[in-house]
Amino acid sequence: MAQKEVLMRLRQHAMEIFDAALDAGDPVKAVKGAVRREGDELVVSDLRIDLKKVQRVLVVGAGKATAAMAGAVEELLGDRLDLGLISVKYGHAVPLARVKVKEAGHPIPDRNGEDAARQIMELLLDAVAKDLVISCISGGGSALLPLAADPVTLNEKVELTRLLLGAGADIHEMNAVRKHLSVTKGGNLMRIAYPARVLSLILSDVVGDEPDTIASGPFAADRSTFEEALGVLEKYGLLTKAPRSIVQRLEDGAAGLVPETPKPGDEIFSRAWSVIVGSNAVSLAAAAIAAQKLGYRTMILSSRIVGDTTQAALFHAAIAEEVRATGHPIIPPACILSGGETTVTLRGNGLGGRNQEFALSLVEIAARLHNVVILSAGSDGTDGPTDAAGALVDTTTCERAVSLGLDPSLYLRNNDSYHFFEPLGDLIKTGPTLTNVMDVRIMLFA
Image (tube, rainbow, N blue to C red; front, side):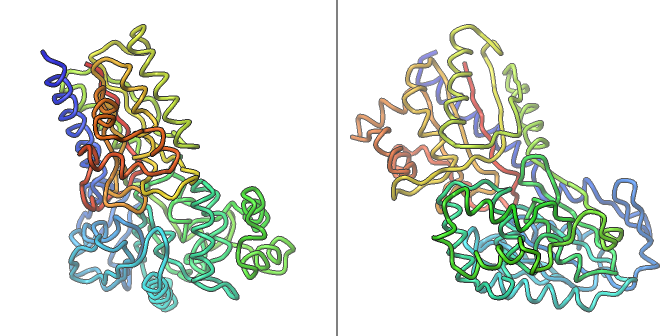
């Protein structure tokens, strides 16, 4: 079979495998797979909730996938659900019967998110011990509940978010800071909802699936501290660049002048349960099954790839070269899968995202490999501030780029992966997928 035909087949298979990963992360399927109703009982794992003893059922939450998650809860509970409010990224709303959906800014928070946070707080302030609050949480929830603690303003939090993103801070570092500048994050919504019972249904977008990290853990005990948050700013040289009100609040908190976020062991968490309904590992497992059905020997490398995007790409490149040279760790036809969420340190002023940059980092290396296709894409359908989920690279990408006058190394230095892949037709554009379980990377070898 000619190389062109082989690569076309590999590219098609890569997209089919990616689609299988997305399907496994479908928020409606995820919720219904974890929660069921048996008559008047709501059953989640080993937790059984007698709805006859519940006064009101409220649904709140935030994240890119949470409108769809709330829709699944509506289907399960019907008219037993009273009311609720969900904050989602623009373009991620779905029509709901009883739960209000408010669209807001992500990854940079805006006034709509601030308004949604206030309204959710008002709902929870009215909650009593006999109420059941069902919290739908997914990736993006942190930016979508941006109610700043005094004296910090929303614009100052927006400025800090841009600084942290540009510096390459990871999700744990971002959230340690955001929790200590917020009245909703880091368990603070649980503090407000108490003594109502809170069941959090979580679609994980973080390595390790830790409830206190996903969406900055609005209903989870917070293990981070003011001192750690201050340390993040110091690590990235932002103590003099961040708004003074933010630095002052963190310094006051570290000195014990501002109350900490609620910690493990606080009595409020005796009324809280968290259930992970979907994750990157689940999606990779589904992708592996799809790859095997297509005839590939398959291995999952890891669902926990973090750190610098370019370094992660070079690590994958070394494995790809080993496969071609020795047949280790797997003999072609082969599929190697990985997931997680890397970070990009901005050096230029181009357009792109971590998945597109990952792919761009492999263009010249892929040119040296025979019949290989590499896909990297975000499960939420967006990659950085672009309309693409990621990009595809194959053995011919470099040659095709050079024929169009595109130098991959120049575009990489300028963080301009979007404009490199766009004229090649190699951007992956899914639109909003209504899920968010981090990134999926697929390496296929014929």
